[in-house]
Length: 352
Image (cartoon, rainbow, N blue to C red):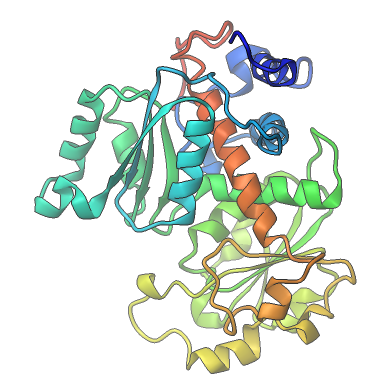
């Protein structure tokens, strides 16, 4: 670490015990080998990852953004489903931590030649990666691979199941936008999520995260795109977008997941926009200072108007991208602590 600026060195050293006294000591603060879903996490474990990311938000805003914490480690980004933002975010996160990052695309992999998912998992394991980031079109595929490999696995999105780092970056974005201090939850925050709730892994992970952090979550969608009995997840369902917006502090829009639909779920994009598109006039029904979010990619003119998406003070969409790199840095750094021999993070008895 010789030659590193004192500010950067302090950030790197603080990553071992950044929240002393606030969370259980050492590996008990986050006792999981993998991050396959928000559903596996307790509230304090979600907060721990959010708080860990704060140091990387700060570092990423410096002229020199790279550390050597993961120097000598290899991270494989195995994406069996197309991605631009998430893949790039994970690649930047790994490289800024000093790791060797290798991207594997399904279009150029042996999966296209008939190799099974288990065979692929065994192949990746034989390469002795130190962490594997996986995106797959099938729900549960990431969990299956995690059971077959010896290193930490991070879920970058699996089918309609979960997208945990998206939910974490969204929560971090909300904390920053609201000016909440480190360690804060989102108790009492009114969040309206509107769009294709049925097919959205982003919606599922956000619901799990936001309700765990104390937010009041409403979900809004056409009847055909609303999961049955979603109230069991602790949210309030709406079919009327105008009603769902009343009193909202955060409005999170989701795109229509056309690639996951089999059949006709909406009459037309034009009709959908009329009923569920976020326009300036519709946003006025939320709180006067409500923020707008979208995980991307956006369908401008369908679920969100450009004037709303590009609003200079109320849109958090580009900030979500910034927070995504910090969150993924935090996840990669925390999950590789055992492999790096960080004191207090021994591997014995670590749950998946």
